[in-house]
Length: 216
Image (cartoon, rainbow, N blue to C red; front, side, top):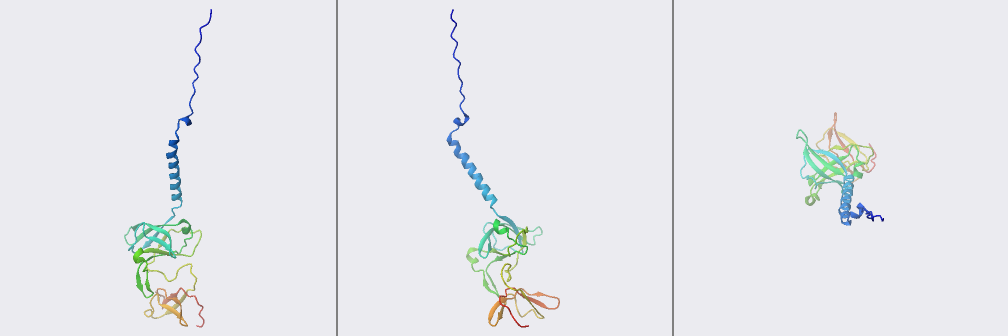
């Protein structure tokens, strides 16, 4: 008596999950990864946010007004808002990361616009390009200051520039205005800063004094 033939065992093979994936799906995945990498790079290098307080902000426009150091753009204004008491205007600006790391305690910021004064005519370039904020400081390290008081006018003395500051005292402060030139033997060697009242006299400062003066 012969035994019945047994059915052959069925061999079940499982296809790898990677074989079910189409190369078409790799395109959006790679695109998403590249977008995330670009977004992180932009976020990491977006710069440092600083706040500058001014009495007014005429001509300053967010995302358009630039911050410059020696005519080189180093940042842009991001927002303009008032202080809680509405007395002053706060400018929020984003500075380049490398530049912001050199900020000093006495960093100066002022608005450059067309102006006529005893120093002459200045800011004519802003007629077409619009106003901008100029900055000056002597590079420092380890300073974490991010809030500054803006100046009403461009300073004569700017940190980081060579020169000797000389103070002159007089009893009458109505003769020489701020910005008046100082001459030595017919050569302009400096300018007068804004006069201020001392205890008994009016004081001027000559911040940009490149020549050594002799005599009393």
